Structure formats: C-alpha cells, structure tokens
Image (cartoon, rainbow, N blue to C red; front, side, top):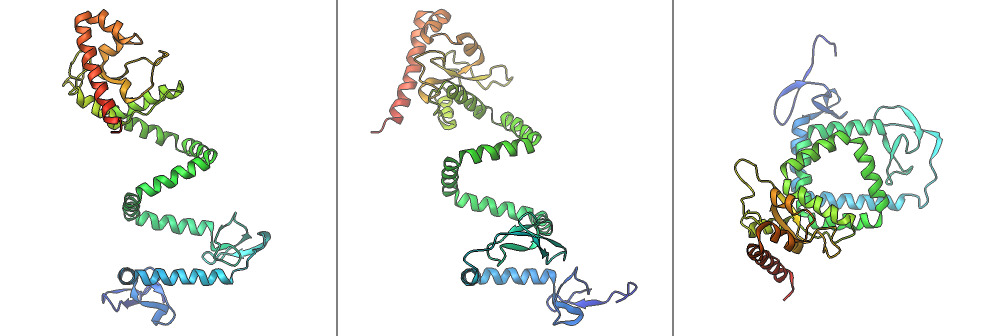
Length: 316
C-alpha cells in the first residue's frame, strides 16, 4: 500500500468506508487486508451489548478459567532470576524477568505479566484518560452501594496496620503538599462549622479528654438557640458578617472538672461573649458581665438545653 493512495475498507455493520489501517480496524488475519470486518467503534458497541446481555455467563466462564489455570500452575514457583531475559509482548523489548520490570501476575507460570511495566502503565493511563468520567461515576456508584462495608474494611485494616497507614499518609502528603494545602484551604472556607468542631475536638485530644462531639450535634445546638448566641441572644449569622460564631467549652479545657469536647459542654457563642468569657468559670463570668439576676436567667436557659441533650442520649 503506497502513501499516495489510501485503501479503504467498508465496515460490515455501519457500512462506513474507512482507511484500511489499524487505527480504524482491529488486526485479524482471517479477513482482507489482515483487518477485522467490523470497525473499532462498532466492535466496541457490539461487545458492550453482548457483555450486558450475557454478563453472568461471562463471569462464570472467567471464574472457571481461573480455577483451571490455578490447577495447572506449579505449587511452588521458582524465585525470580535477574539473569533470565523476558520479552515484552507489546514492545518486543527484552528485560530481566523480575518485578522491577514486569508487574506480578500469579496467573502466569513465571509469576509476571506479559507486558513490561512501561507498556502496561502507558496503556492503562491512556485508557483512563479517555474513560475518566465513566470510571469516576462507576466508582462513586460502587462506593455508595457498599459504603458501610467499605468503611468497616478500612477501619479493620487501619487498626491492623497503623504504621502502614501513617507511612502512606506521610508519603502522599509530601508528594501532594501543594494540592493538599489548596484543598484544605478551600474545605475550611466552605465548611467553617466542621472546621470549628475539628479544632475543638483536637484541643480536647491534646489533653487526653473525651472528644465525641459530632457535626450533627453541633448543628442541633445552633438550632436549639435559633441561630443565636446562647448567652446574649444576638444573631450569629448577621447580614454584615460582624458577629462570628464560636464553639465554646462551657467548662474551660484548663479546668480540672472539664468533661471535654462533648455535646453537654459545648455552646454556640458570639465572638464578643467568647472573648470576654475566655477561661473563666461560667457563673462568675455571667454575674460579672450581666449581674446576678440576669446571670441566673441565662444559666437556667443553658442548663435546660444541657438537660434536654442528656435526656435525648440517655437510653429509655
């Protein structure tokens, strides 16, 4: 076939005339020009339709094949030998037959994949770039369907391998430091309430105190006080953003009697009240700020909230 004249081949399915090259047709020596009679696009569509119609049969056949191959594999595989050369079936180059150049594949007699790592990664990355949205959607659906089971498995693995988890986290952080910093900045900006809860729980953990407050419990506390400061009753979400919501430890963390960052010790206060209170005992601070009579009214209102919380978490 010369460069000046490009021979065309007609797909038997869509009837399109396309250049008779491997770019448009899969290789198949049984047909003319050594190419399949179906173009790549039609082959892909028909293959997908067949898979959807015969998914159970295909999976069952694959399972039987794997079991049959396992029976024929040697029970004890020889150790990898770097002096032996293995030819990659993709690029036809020779490399030492070790996991350094080939990914491990227990279904192969020598325990190594037929493609070298470079060819395999190039193929996988190219396919992923083309099908990125489809893969992401599939993973989201799969995770949503098996979320509880996945979380359970992750917890079991992390408990059994704490060092591996920490090492992986460190490696990922240093490899993606800028990306992580940008994501954290954006997350804190979009989720200020969750940020406050995280920081409050972290302070309690530093002092070996309970830190069981959840985001849902914090939202319920804000709703109980109608989005107002639990002490002065000013709106916490004003139009001008002058009043800032603070998560206050009603009994301060430096107090020996502090129960920690738990739902019965956390209150939504405005920035002015929280800055004024600081680490003072609640009753003394209220009397000093509002007088004894009003202080007792505020204490009664706050204690009523804590009591309602205790009743909701106490088993009947």
